[in-house]
Image (cartoon, chains in turn brown, red):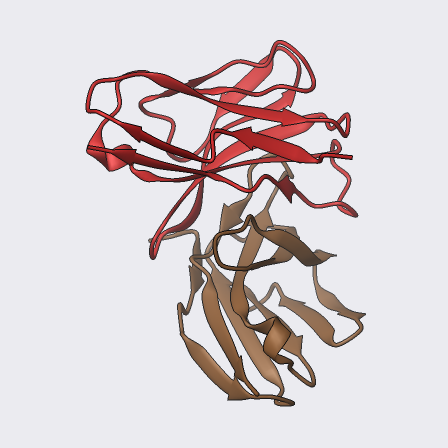
Length: 110
Length: 114
């Protein structure tokens, strides 16, 4: 069983839609949670991070962590065509070794 | 500020050849890591380092060696290339334990082993 599971998509939505991206994990010791965005043929770039449980909001992006369910989410409000990319979740228990999901490909149609 | 620089960007190797993928960062980050990215597999950690002179294995270390003689550089060596090592390789760095930064990734090295 993989440490982190993520639906690969692709997920196609119209411009302006609310997007929900999710990951589940098996290791209850994970306490650092991050979301990265990766454009085609580029390296991942950090979008959001959270420590332990709870919500965090940054502009159009909201990250949620539910440690009791071992489930994390990223919500994108008012999605734009420029949000079209692959979104990767990542998590760790000690900040040395991060485990990544396989990524969800998002396509926002104008 | 160059960030994380990886060279080469593309490489084709024959089975059995060896090579070194270079990674350099100019941000004085303590932590550096090497990942490989394969379709459907996401990013998998090969080796990582928490400071000069300190390295450790990740999820998929077999067939790869690393060393960290300086804070800036973290080269990845393929000892005897195999077709299974065809992948995109990313180097990443972060300040030690600073969650505010996350990892900064290089632009990747696309390696094909024939």
